Length: 204
Image (cartoon, rainbow, N blue to C red; front, side, top):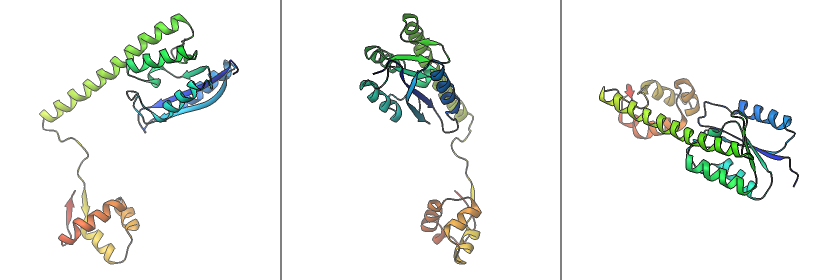
């Protein structure tokens, strides 16, 4: 195997984010280092606290098959936010003689200093994740104490209008488009609700 093979790993936690910045930065970095990118692995909308992730697992399988000897990540917390899992990954990469490079944080696990920095950052990343979770729990509890209703807001459905459209021969697709409702919801509504109502504004 040539000594310039690398994998790129990107991750974001929510579907509201995207991986473009990570992917572009790491691709440019690989070109600058003259590394041949074997594959770009991407976990989209997956928490870094999860040890098992589809693309990460596939990358680990290929790493154990010695398909590359560099792994490029944007930041360490993109690889994971669980200290024990991160340190296990770092140990495995060392055993496999794979250099883990964090582009934003500027460390390379092929050096002793890089391994020390990675260990510290792994602990800090886990601490930040735990602190965030704790803040969320405290916020929810405080909101409940103030009587705030949590969860998705209720909405009102014009069952009379829906019934008229259905009786006029309109499909669920047409009705759903008008009232911004899914076909599944309309099927359930007709099955469980409309046969028990004369048509009125109904809260769901």
